[in-house]
Length: 222
Image (cartoon, rainbow, N blue to C red; front, side, top):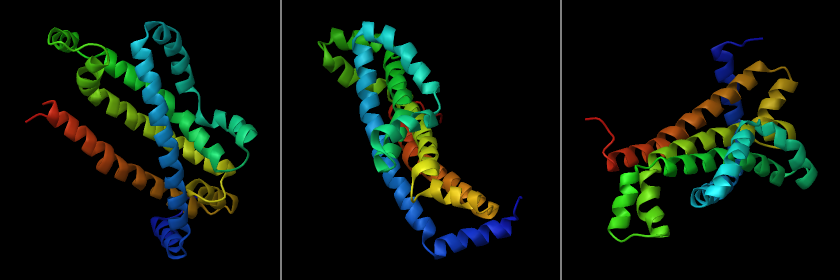
């Protein structure tokens, strides 16, 4: 029921040797890059629109917060009915799983910018969209990047949920094969790979973004 580390490493080596793991990682990364990119574009658009129009902010914020708490797997029946059992359904689940977290992070980050920055920009002649582009958005980047990282984690979970139920290849599908064959070493090996990918993305992408932003704004401690 719980394999030894040696058995897990052997299974992991076998998955790498027959290229099962390589094909699964490429398929999963392709899906999450497409889905997450869509969620970033949609989430940023929704967030900026809510900041710009107070009426939308007051009416959409509770709805988006409720949708954010909805498990990503709940969108899968809609995805299957609308798109069928194909790539589009998984990408839809990924997009819906992370869009709302990103939009709320955009809205919260911009609204929590120090009002003195906005007043100083207007005093110097900035107005309209220039205030957001040159002052509000750059000042909100620390919060925005944290929200994007949270959105990535939601997207990753949504990807696994979608692949476990409807994918023909991918990490989630390899995980399900291990479950169906009662091969717990394969299940744990895939879990290890998922964790490693998450750590690599956090360290070399979001970690570097956060570090650069913090240095630019003088938030790093000496």
